Length: 375
Image 1 (cartoon, helix red, strand yellow):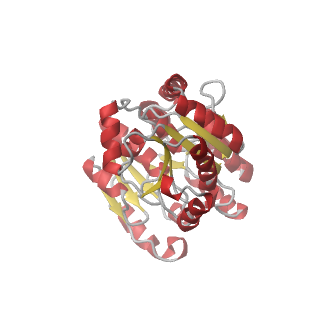
Image 2 (image 1 turned 90 degrees about the horizontal axis):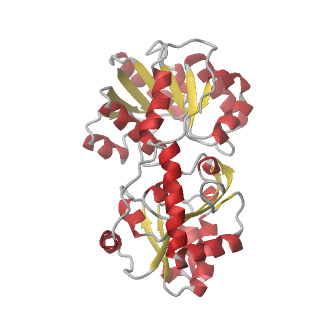
Image 3 (image 1 turned 90 degrees about the vertical axis):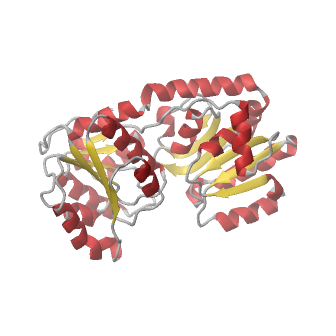
C-alpha cells in the first residue's frame, strides 16, 4: 500500500517520534510511505532522510496556513497514494483534501484539548473530521474522552491506539560513563533528569523544588534538563533563588536523547496537562526508573499502582522527594521499577502492536457512520 502521512510539523516532539516509529514499521512490512509536512521540515527531516523515507515540507503562510492551501492541494494532486494519515489538527488542510484517498483516511490526534484551543474551535475541527475521516485515533483514553465530550458525534469513529515505544538494551556502566562524558556530566554523581518543552504546563518548577530538597540531603546529586522553551529564563533564575544553580545542567534541545537517558539514575517528570507523556516511557525503555506526577493526562493508563508504582495524580512534593531518594539510594528498588515498567511497555506499547492497530483502520474501506471503539 502507498501511504502518505500529512503532519502539522516535523520537529522532534512525541507526535513526531510516534509518527516516525509507525512509518518505519510500515516500511519494513513492504508499504511505500512518505511524509508531507504543513510546515518546513524541522529536525525530524534528518531522521527521515537517514531512514530513506521521502519527505517534503511546505511553507506555512497566513493565519492557520490559509495562504499555503493552494500549494498543498497541488502537492496532493501530484501524488499517487492508496491511504492517508493526517497527524495533528489543521482545519484548512482537512477541507483541502478534496477526494484525495477519500475511502482510506485516518486522523491521528496527539494533543490534549484544554488550554490549547477554545472549545468552539475544537468543535469545528471535529465536525470537519467526522465528515472526512473513517477513523480518528488517539494515544490515550484521556484525550479521546476529551474530544468526545467536546463533539459527541465523533464517538462512532474515535479509537484509542496507544503509542509506540521501543525497548533498548540497558546500558553497561562503561556506556553510561561515556554518555556522561559526551554531555559534560560528572562521572560519579547521581543524576536526576527531565526532558521536554519548557512551558508552564510541564511544571519544571516542581522538578526544581524537588531538586532543592534532594540536594540538601545528597551531596552527590546533580540535575539535568534537556529541552528549551519560553520558561527557560525564569527557570534558570529560579535555580539561583533555590541555591542550586551550580547543581543543574541545561542541555537544550537534543536531536538524539540516547546519551541523556543513559546518563540518568532517575527521571523525575511532572506536568499539569499531558496527552500521554512520552518522555517517562522512553526513560523506562532505556532502563531508567521514573517518578512522575501528572494532574491531567493519560500516563496512568499505561503506568499505575498495579503495574508500576510511583505515578501520581497530584504534585505532592514531599512524597515524590521521598520516593526519589529511595530509588536513588537503593539499587534493588530502582531495578524493580525498571523491570516492571519495561514489562508493561512490552505488553502494551510495542511499535509492531501500535502499527497493527493503526493499519487496521487504513486497510478498511471508509463506511460513513460505522465503526466501533478499539483499544
